[in-house]
Image 1 (cartoon, rainbow, N blue to C red):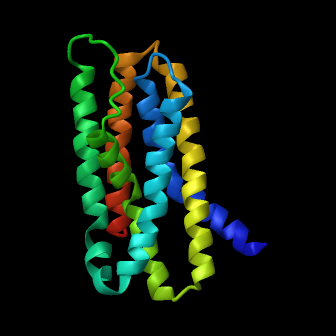
Image 2 (image 1 turned 135 degrees about the horizontal axis):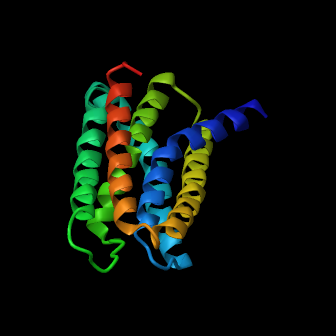
Length: 189
């Protein structure tokens, strides 16, 4: 039973960045349909499950590089996306476009799952059982999927009334998440 609690907490902890970004994505949506929430959940949940698997497989070869630079990579991606959102919030009023293009969703999914890659690397060093790793990947992916879909819904409820302020807040949140990631990576937090 303790292993399931541990895996649940791991999944929740890793899903929080994706949840926050999902709320930001939902902020820009006038009307949410379930397909959009599922797509966003699949991107974030899929990458959160994929990254620890990749980290585990490649961990023994690239552990130092990933551990050393993962926080900087996530920081730069989130800074870029957050800065773009802030810039857009000061622009002229435009039709709300909750961009779900492959490029945008891919970058967001990678940026929010870099920490999961590092977790996968740590799995390789801890020499955990294959069953534990499979369960961890399933927990992380499913929990992130649920949190992301719920986050989009929460964001969409508030986004129609406060679009430009929501975009500004969303950009600031993404930058703050990036700062948190880099401070964690540097051992300051």
